[in-house]
Length: 101
Image (cartoon, rainbow, N blue to C red; front, top):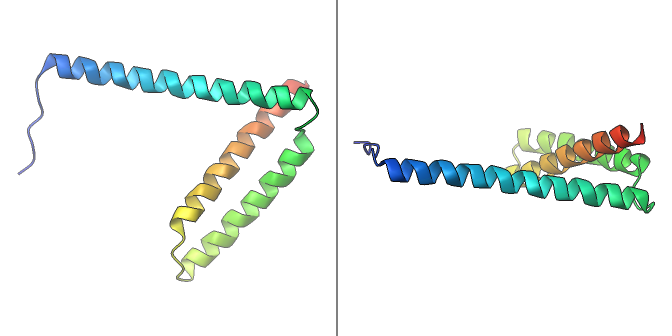
């Protein structure tokens, strides 16, 4: 039998506050990463061309790992990490392109 939901209003309040705090922390980390990326761009350490190259490599790696997974290899954990890396690089590229204009 499934557990019944608690009707404790204090627990519900704390749960909602924790959810808000987690989202606030997530946004703070994202803003810090964006600021660091822009600082690296301004210092000449990071440019759109190098990010495009890394993104192409990551996308190629995702396709390769997806093909290996379909053929019977179980590397789903590695595939998830590579997908997250590709998504992060895509966000970096968009941020760099927005700030060039």
